[in-house]
Each structure stands twice: as C-alpha cells, then as structure tokens.
Amino acid sequence: MALKRRNARDAASEQSVSLEQARQEFASMLSACAAAPEGFRVLRAWLAVRGAEALRIDPAASPGLPELIRRAAAAPASPARRIFAVLVLDAQSVPGLLTAGSPRARLERDICALLETALPHALARAGYPFGGDLDARRRHIAALADSIGDYLQPLEPSIPTWLSGRSQR
Image (tube, rainbow, N blue to C red):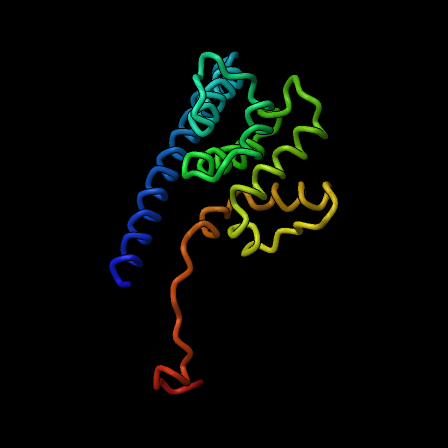
C-alpha cells in the first residue's frame, strides 16, 4: 500500500516537473516573441505542436490550434493533455494570442470544455463555477491563470489535532 502511494507521488512529481518545464518554456517563448513582429504566430505554432503531442497526432498534419483545443477536450485523459490544458490556460491570459482568426465565443466554450475535462479537481479546488454561464466561467479562468500551479499540487494529508494528540488552540 505504501509503495502504491509512493509511486503515485513519484508520478505526480514527474508530471509536475514536465509541467513546470513546459510552463517555463512557454514563458521564455512569450518573452522572446513579444519583441518579434511574427511572435504570436510562432507561439501559436508551438502551442499547436504541444496540442498535437497531447493528442498523439503528427504535428505536421495537425489542424489549427482552435481545432486542437476542441479535440483535446474530448480526448482521453493523459499527462500530456493535462499539460496542454495548463498551457492553454496560460495562453488565455495573453490578450490576442488565442483569439486570432477564430470565433471568440466558440473558442471560449472549447477552452472551458478542455479545462473542465482535463483539470476537474484543480478547478473544483479553485471554486470554479462548473454549472455557471459562459461569462462566469470565462472570468474565473482569467483569474485562475496565475494561481493554477497551487491548485495542481497534490493535497497534503492532514491529521486533526484531536486525533494527533496535540493541544487545540
């Protein structure tokens, strides 16, 4: 039993390492692309490659980023899909990065669907309004971009003070 818990913790830490690496790569690309005239196009192409990897399709034959987001929402759960969802969340916080050349309302619905299926526990911990209207969910997602890393961390087990024998304050 303890081995099973340790393996789950190790897998979570490996995933968080690759998640942190992907987020750092996104941040460095974003800062590098901000100065270049074709910057957002390069960053969207990088996100499309990450989405194609998450869906296990050939990046050269992949559809555009909005279609990848839509397909990822319906794809089976995987660590790569979860990483892609976090990257989409990070990209959502950059004005104009995802919305270029696609209907905004449909893209926002697809982003919500991707995040709700790929990150349900993190969103629930953050108080995400799953049953709310699109505008409420969009506002919550916009506010969540900076703190999603905290909600993705595994919960630490806690022992009530009355059970542990420590004095209550």
